[in-house]
Amino acid sequence: MAISPSSSPTAQLNESDFHYYGWRVVLAANLGVMAGFGSLFVYTFSVFLKPLSAQFGWSREAVSAGFGLGAMTVGLCSPGIGRLLDQIRPRRVILPCMAIFGAGFASLALLRPHLWQFYATCILLGIVGNGAAQLAYSRAIVTWFRNRLGMALAVVMAGSAIGSMVLPVVAQTFISHWGWRAAYLGLGLLALALGLPLTWRYVREREDNEELKTSSHALAGVSWRQGISSFPFWIIVAVLLLVSASENGVLAHLSALLTDRGIAAEDAALTLSVLGGASLAGRILVGKLLDRFMASRVAFVMLMPTAVGILILSRATALSAGSLAAALIGIGGGAEADVIPYLLTRYFGLKAFSTLYGFTWTFYAFAGAVGPVILGRAFDLTGSYKFTLTIFAVAVALGASLMLLLPSYRETGVPSQASL
Image (cartoon, rainbow, N blue to C red; front, side, top):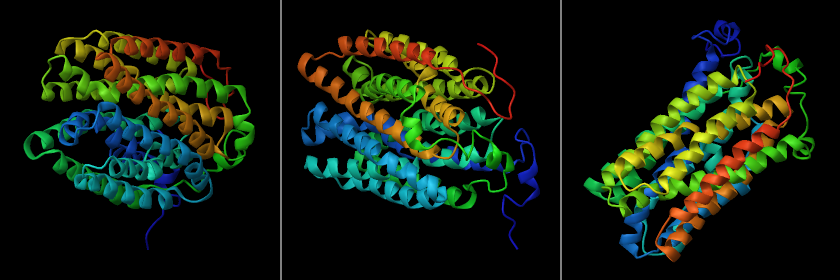
């Protein structure tokens, strides 16, 4: 007879023990996130931007609108997906969403010169996007961890960083050797191969965690209505609006921006890998810091290098400068993705965790949809990214500073946080 993770001896191990079942959930979630919307769609989009423009004669603004539609659809659908996750087991949401996402991404190989087809596919990917991303996986993770929650979330989110490091190079290699259609097909199949089997085998909530059942900051937390009426929630939203528009604008245009300035396409794709590598290191660092210091201060420290990196990128004309900018953007880029679920559990508990997380994704995705379109529009009008990137750098710095306005939170069942 099979032994469930909640009834097995490993379920009773300490969170720091390598054999603790929760870390298997984390590893499966890491690979699922790497193959999901937030990684595969977002980080490879800029690699496909110029090939699609050249193939069909679409403007960069028109292609960027596909990114925007996908991001906006993610935002609109995230609260509903979050509500589902608060009511049924995460695996029952993730598996069908991942299947539709992988097949939908692969179907882009069949694109014809009709923008509506491209847009319709991007919308489909957005509908299921957060059912195959960190929003869905985090619901399972937060039931397994308390003292090591920061590190657990960081490892999950590192899947996106690994994806940003590996997938653009894979996409560019496919495009260079076999064309963009083969790239879409191959990446879609990769999403199915990584996302489905491990999720089916390992991803589930912990059912025997008495601490979570009795903690005032856990399942007995506040309702989603109480959460969205609070001051911390709207500070979080303001930060997401500023940072998401800037980061996603840069990500969607990074490859095109660098090749415009004389950098080879393969080298431009490599800078995306540099960004991903720095993001991976930054996210692991964020995980360590979150388990020791106030999350809002961690976010401030990690986001400021991103602002500096965007400012450098606005003036970069050589591979060295582009790589430095990418590394700085990567260090803090995505820090908010690690910090937000952590803050939500600390301020609001688990009762409506996924619903509130879904609402934050609505704002994050809306801003993420607008940022690339703004940057594309600015380029189409002026032939330059410089001024708009400078504005984006200022916006990230402002978002980082707003994090310092968050009030302190009271921990339950873990050591009190030290000041940074």
